[in-house]
Structures are given as structure tokens and as C-alpha cells.
Length: 113
Length: 422
Image (cartoon, rainbow over all chains, first blue to last red; front, side, top):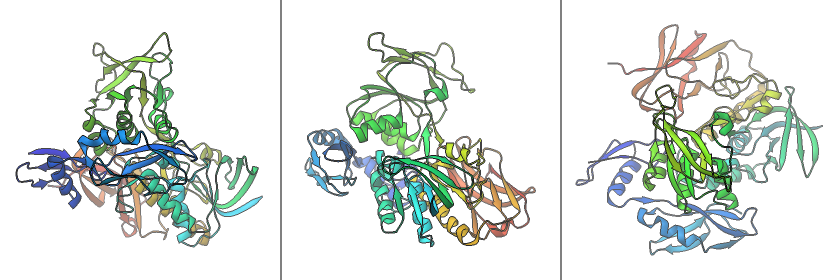
């Protein structure tokens, strides 16, 4: 049995997950169940960061992974951002890097600039 | 003098939501004044996700959340004056502003919404002893340097305080290649949301020292920057315990030790300030002690979720539209008192005869973390309403709604936390 705090929303439910049966208790919504199972089988996180932009109102523009990626790949994903250089204008949702680390996850822009 | 029906001071989440709320309820002459070049306020540097779950039922980053409201406001005829600083506000609702584009101007408004947000407490506010050296930042300043300007403020970091911005910056600094040696928290519990302790500290094995504080800062004699901090355990009165000192080498100390509503303009307008919230005292319609001036968002009370800022601000916008149509509500008042375990309440007064909203919304924070309790509303010793809660924590603002029917015959209501009924 693993005890977790759900990070799906700011409520932070205290979950108990049975690692064998994958039964989740303590959640107050379906997101909690999904999080509980994922956390004991393949924990994932959305990564948010910034990349260089030319011609924008500031030198950096914010980006994120459009889906959560495996926790073990967070730092590899961060490395990929070091070489990115965008040109203004960019819009929310513009794909910066597609299918990173063969994960089917894209890096997308999160700020209009 | 320029005249507008409604002027909103601040173009962050509160100001944008208030403008949208007022417009949706029929106000057609609205001006937002924003001191930055860009709308969206602090959300622009909050690049992490987790915003919008209540309001939009999806997980957005700060800039994405801001853009949702910027787009809504752009579809209306709301006017925006950016790069403009409001220098002064008087109680007869005259604003004095200055900008590079238009110079000095005075603007007269029929109604005003205060949406100036809050600012961070600094080293001076909590008087940490030690050297006055380089390398000490508030967490929010470090966030702006990192996420907007592209500078990492240090390589080896200690964070004092476990507010949400501090926790978020711990993760951010690690992702950008710094190490975070410790997060040090004076209280015996975290002052940030649980989810942030999990995904920002635990995920990266950053130790959280509860009931500890920084008792000395030592500068490097050669470069005049932080070389190490001394942390100590504190007793139940939050006083450092001699003999528990330990050194942590670092080049940077980030402070995440609380936020204070930014009310200099409110004070110029002679608006009464509540010493508990450091924000204006308001009635249930979010109107301050000065007729026609309303307040919402972090200038009123520091929120933990932007979703709740938007909801409060949209209400302020709606209530302003009622004020502009019907004028001030003259009414006897119900005083809202914070009792056992309740730190403050917003609003502080309820107008008995107001018809703006069917139910009165009251928000507050508890003084310490608790499990399985009830929020109880009482008048003259009898219970008017009760709300069970599995978990209560100072980091999480509570919201309750009380029907006006229950408030007909009372002059004072007490809000407190009590045991569950057997």
C-alpha cells in the first residue's frame, strides 16, 4: 500500500494505492484514481520551461510538454530546449519540438508573443 | 478631466475578470489601467501549470490562463491603458495617472475597482540577521529573472519559507541546473499547497526543514555574495533553539515568506484597511468603506488559486453594475466576527437589505492545519449553518455561502471551527 498526495488539483487528496490490485481510495474525483494508478506504475509530469525568442518583448517565451512525460525523462527534455531559438510572432499551442525522445509528446508555446 | 463610468486599477487576473464581469452585466464604459506593457500581471511569470481547473476545467499554465481572459476582454469595448502608473486616488474617485505616451492625466470615475494585487515580503519585513550581501532575492523576483529575462540567479540555493512561489522556484531552479540544498520553514507545516510540496520538493529530493529558520547569513569576503546561511530549529514559540545551528553552503537565498496586499492607493483614498488581511474592509458586495470603490483579488485578500481570484473579481464586476444602476444600498449591518481558529473573514460586514446576491459568500483562512472539523456559523449562540471539512489548512482559503434568509434577525455572526457532531 502506498500513501500519496494527489497533485491533479490544488485540493491535494490523500490517496492510498494498493500496488498489487491498483485499487485507489481517498480520492474525491476520477482524476485522483488515474493519478494514483499512474504514480505507482509509471509516474509522469508535465514539464514547463522557457526557450529563447528573437524579436519578442522579452528574451524568453514560455513552453510546456503538451502531455505529461515519464519522470525519468524530465532532464532529457530540458536539455532539448537549450538549442531552441524562436522568432516572434508565436502563438499559444505552436509546436516547438515534435515527438520529443520518441514519446509522442510535443513541446508547445504557452505565451503569445 | 477624462471621465469614465468604471475604472479598474490593475490589468492582472483580478482586473481582467472584474472588467469581464462588469461588461457581461451591462457596463459599457470601462477603462483598465495597467502599469506594465502587457496585461496578465503575475501570471506572465508563472509559467508552471495547474491554473484553471475550477474555472475552465483544464490545466493551464499562467500565461495561457491570462490569455483566456485577455481574449474575453478583447471581444468587448473595454479600453486598456497600459504602461500607465496610477500615482494617486482620492475618495471622490479621481485618479492621477502618468505614462510616457500621454503624460500626466486626471481621470474621474463613477465607480472604481481596486485590483492592484499584492507584493512579496522582503528580508526587511522579517528582519533576518547577518551580512547584507548580494545573492538574496524574493522568490518572485528570481522567478521574473528566470522566466521573463532568462537569468538564473544562483547555482546553489537555500529557500526560506514554503509558500507556493518558493516551492515552484525550488523546482524551477533545479530544472535549470541549480541545486537546492534545503527549504527551511518556520512553521511546523508547509505554507504552500500539498501538491507543490510533492511535485516541487519530493520529486527532486529537496529536503524540507519544518520548524526551522535562517538565523544568520554569511557573505564571502572576496565577492560580497552569500557564502553560507546558518539555520536553527525553532521552539513552539518560533524562537531559535540554541545549540541546533547548522551551516548550509550556498550562493543564493530565496525568500518565500508571505505576500502583502498593495494598498497605498487605497489608503490615499482614505479606505479603511483591515489589519488582519492588510486589505480593504468590505461589505458582502465587495464595496469598500468609500462609496463606489470596490476591491477584489489579492489586493483584498491573498488568494492561493487564481481561479478564485477570477470568481471574486467577476462578482465585483457584477456588483459594480448594480451600484451604477441603483446607487448605494442603505442598510443596517451585520458584523462578521472571526472566532476560534479563524484568522479573518472577507467580507467583514454584510448589508442586511442588499439584494445583490441570494447568498452571502464568506472567505477566510484557518490558523493551523486540522482534520475532520466543521466550519460553524453562529448568531446569539445558535447555529445558523455548518460545513464539514476533512482537511483544513492555513495554505488553503475556505469559502462558504450562507443564504440571506438565515441572516434576517441577526446583527453579528461568528465564524469558527468546531468538532464534528457525534
